[in-house]
Amino acid sequence: MGRFVILNFFKKIIGTAVSKPQLQPVLVEPVANPVKIYTRSEHPISRTQISAHALKVLYQLKKSGYASYLVGGCVRDLLLGREPKDFDVVTDATPEQIRKVFRNCRLIGRRFRLAHIYFGHEYIEVATFRGRADAENDDQKFHASGQLLRDNIYGTIEEDVWRRDLTVNALYYNIQDFSIVDYTGGLEDHKAARIKLIGDPVTRYREDPVRMLRAVRFAVKLGFVLDAECQQPLPELASLLNAIPSARLYEEFLKLFLTGYGLQTFEMLRQHGLFGALFPAVERSLNEESEGFPKVFIAKALENSDKRVAQGLPVTPYFLLSVLLWDSVQALAQQKIAQGVPSVPAQQMAASEVISEQVQRIAFPKYMGIAMRDVWYLQSRFHQQTGTRPFKLITHPRFRAAYDFLLLRAEAGDVDQKIADWWIAFQAAEGMDQTAMTLPPSTKGPQKRRNRSKNYRHRNPASKSTVEHHD
Ligand code: ATP
Ligand code: MG
Image (tube, rainbow, N blue to C red):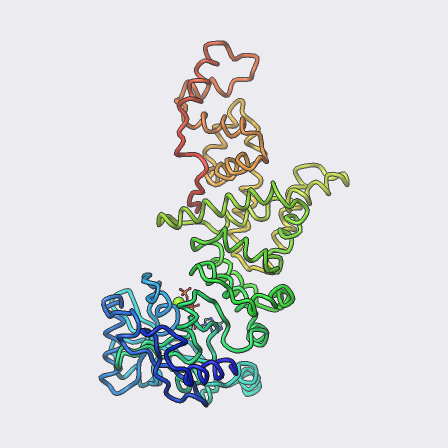
């Protein structure tokens, strides 16, 4: 924070020389509280970019005499000309006051209440400025009295801003005069494509270790550089993530890996020593083999799901989880087999153990564990290509996912490409040809072989190597 004060003081002295003219801020309280106000002509956000519902909420609050701002991700994204995922509003009105302003309002949350203003099925989330109260003390009071403490929770915009994580996430768009209010130098950082924590990074990471993941996630998503001071402590503090509830890490896992930037995020998390805190077993198996399998396998799966997100197609968390954990399951199964456990139970036991270790870190729902085990189990059945077994396998509810998994394994060199090709051809073949393909090798005549090679030529390239949506 001291740095901001100095920076602003410095700017004040030398005037426009430091920043570009269109971003020249108006210094309101230069020393104690160096807020910068960028007037409408000094920033690019136009009301035409803002959702009509969000504008209605902002105007309505203003009309009722309250301050109201857009804040967080939407301001950050609007500055990039991107369409925000959602528009978050903050105000100095309390939830009860907000409720009085809007008929279509529902209050949610117990301790920190938020208002949802409904427009059909859509809603705009409105929060009251949060106070400075540090979470730990508050929680203690909360637990000791067993009551909801509402004092200290709501605050002013000056307090609200310091609770936020990144400077680029702490910009407020003021509906009063369409200016951007910036307490932390967020607009300069945004302009410089820089991700920075507000305040001292180590302190802020310790307060909430998930901020380490968020810093990486936003750096990748926005194509910004993570500030050196914010990068440097990551490997050392990574283990703080062990204290984060696994349900919260599951939510974060979805955002990190399944929102279109999975591959780059995976690489950056590994680079900064954070990936192992989320997936310890996977990190171990990746370290055993620096290139090749399983890295290629995981990278291909992430690349596929990133492509699907870019095309607006759905992606499936359990599929990615099954890819991530596959090598660990295989390694553990091999150990068990070496100890004399037969292959099938060895695989089953390994699957259970790897899943129960992982779910302690990232609480994926139980049905996903079941689906992952199916996908893994079905891999051995792809080797059975005679008789009625292929016909049965194809009707298995998890066939599609297991098949995509097989194609990906083949691409990554984990299984003979011929096996994958056989299944591609088998699915493309018609009734008689399919039956011919499943005859034992000795009974296959020259005629049938010709049919089979025809099917290879006719295989459908579109069915290859896309990670589908698996329910
Ligand atoms: P997205 O586009 O992913 O929704 P976002 O910035 O809106 O990005 P949210 O997780 O929706 O991210 O959070 C909304 C805002 O709340 C953030 O912009 C940030 O100001 C604040 N925030 C969220 N999580 C934290 C955190 N762990 N610590 C401090 N502030 C946070
Ligand atoms: Mg958001």
